[in-house]
Amino acid sequence: MTTTIDSLRTANGQPVAVAEVPVVPYEVFAETLSTLTASPSVELSALFGMPGGSQSLRVIAATSNASTGAIDLFAMDVGDRYPSLTRQVAKAHWFERELAEQWGVVPEDHPWLKPIRFHRSYREGHDAWNRSVGDQILPSVQPLGTDYFKVQGNQIHEVAVGPVHAGVIEPGHFRFQCHGEVVFTLEIELGFQHRGIERRLVGGPDKRTLHYMETLSGDTSIGHATAYCQAVEALAGAAAPLRSQAIRVIALELERLANHTGDIGALAGDVGYLPTLSFCGRIRGDYLNATALICGSRFGRGLVRPGGTAFDIDDAMAAELQKRITGAYRDVTGAANLLWSSASVMARFENTGIVPLDMVRQLGVIGMAGRASGSDRDARRDFPSGYYRFAQLPISTWHTGDAFARAYVRHLEVQRSCEYLLESLQQLPRGDSRRDIGPMKGDSIVVSIVEGWRGEICHVAITDHDGAFAHYKVVDPSFHNWIALAMSLRNQQISDFPLCNKSFNLSYCGHDL
Image (cartoon, rainbow, N blue to C red; front, side, top):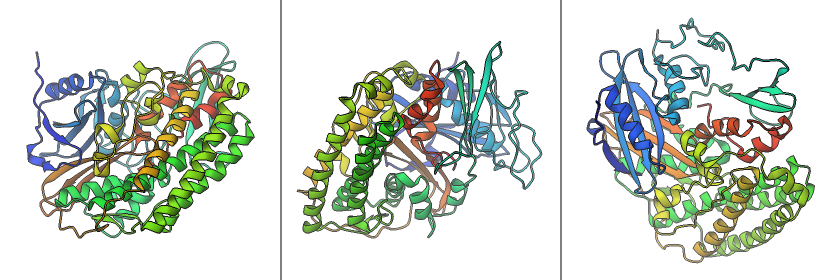
């Protein structure tokens, strides 16, 4: 009989000594993880490895409790094999596949152990699939005797899509097992970009670090840059000025508005409803141009910097931003209402791609996709950082978990973000927008969580004795949510795939780190 432990309890953006993270035997680690994540308010925000002592791998877990705002850290050391955690905690399934690929450890009895990015192991001579390790890109050789999951039976057929797509889209492979037009299962294969960003962050920060953060997932430049800067500031013991914190939130909400508006239009296009598609394409540009007004970049690059922001908002700019947001808010509301009043659109949206709440909780689906199924979780409220500590936005949820819900939650979030921006631009805090920060504290770990437009962004930074990055872990919300897209296609018509896919609109590059 095992017992759980008191993990190291911390909070968003609160650094602690790495040595204080408890390292426990596997049995205790597994039961602690299972016990903590059994609560519907607790998610597995990160599970990652770094070199331990005497040829072992240290696996660190970070769980986050939305009801208390607490983050729990605990660790275990494993050899080349260990019993899979996924059988007890389904949320660990993708993380364990990543551990196997990055570090060459085998989670025994994992239900579907395949690589997720197809790159070489970080540890020379360690490979979870006994593949020959050379300089070439490793092939998709699986331990299960087959490359892909297959459904056996009469009249079953297979449809393969990608990784090269007909259009401007990143590479990803989708493999459907179908009976007629009905999809029995969808397997999603990613990892075609081989970016290696996390490895390049070790030893930093340096001149390239912020560039990596801003391009890690290009449509979430502000979100990832903010998570990174909050981690650096926490390790340096120097918070950004209040005015710059407010400007960061304005930029984050503009990023949310641009992407949600673009997605509403794209969803309309997927069902052939051209008025909303055309309107939202233009209105998305209005929000992007509002961001460019602040910093010169439509995606917000160059704005968020350690210690604050590189650009300020004066009174004249604030007035112009209010004018632009008011007009865009009016227009996007009208464009969205066209969707909800169209019977043909609603017939395609409703009951398409349902992901029920119990599945959301079991698999750890987060962000807008989770809230569309009734999950009441949003880091802006649950793990507030920066200016969100002083100005909270209402949380937008729906209950049906279908394509309509994911579109409608976007619509609700657009309304609430616009209302917040119009109010906040009238009362920006006075003072500086940036301050110098000193060196980062050594031998420390910090978890930085930001609610990006797709969902919860989690950065975990660990410093060495000299205060440089010994390890840096990035968990984009898409890492949690790709499995939800696969589940949404079960027992759906294969023709519903474009609509379901766009209703999540997940990041390929944010996954392929």
